[in-house]
Length: 105
Image 1 (spheres, rainbow, N blue to C red):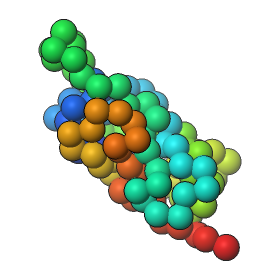
Image 2: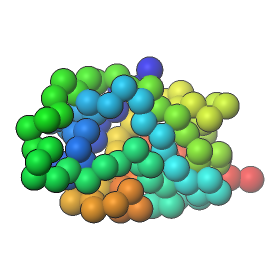
Image 3: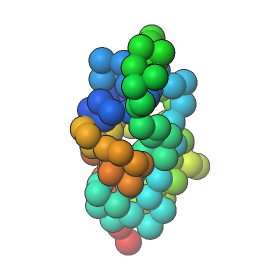
Image 4: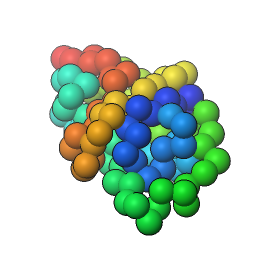
């Protein structure tokens, strides 16, 4: 499992910068830069959800479609720690894997 720190405070799964979802998926097939990736698991927090998500954990299973990332092995992230960025995101396209490192060909 990967230690995940999330600065996407508007995500329904964010609990004090930890993810309350057991697993997430990073998107970005063909990405060469972090801003070409996203957290496909992002769900915008609504007012009715404000207090419903709790128990964020430091470790989360991270699937990965960013095939050019050096941490991607068989569609799983093998980094010890990653960060998901996009503080006021309203959709997954406004998020990114800040830890993406291209092993571009």
